Image (cartoon, rainbow, N blue to C red; front, side, top):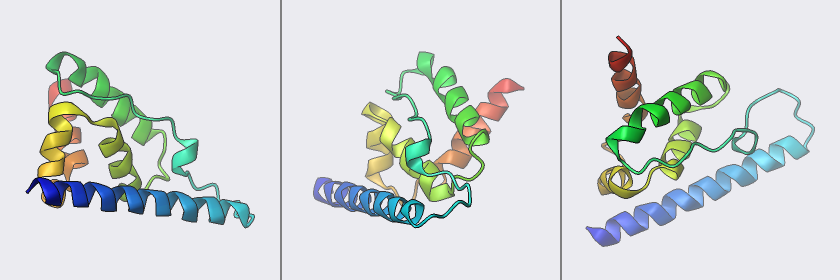
Amino acid sequence: MAMKCEQLAVKEASLYNRLMELQSDSSQTGSASGKNTLRNIPKIPSFDGYPISFYRWIFGVDELFKNSPGLRYFQKRILFVDSSMGDPRSWYDADPYRNIDILTILDNLFQSNLA
């Protein structure tokens, strides 16, 4: 199981690097479409899983994503995975395909806690 998680993490990192290369290539070809790339987006602060920092973290994520409407779901997922560590990262790494809707889940949690 640990081997699969490591392999998935390596594949995800490889895809992330490839995505960055493709975005870099498209921006160098003179594409002025105004699309947001991950290089233009500030990094999400790290989230370690402590409840006390959850609300500040999810508020920052929500604000970042709302102010970056050009981000695709895959890009948001990369930013999320990049920022998580500790228990949240372990939970995600355990089964990343089952947890693909994490941003929706977190958004629902955030919205329900505002009400």
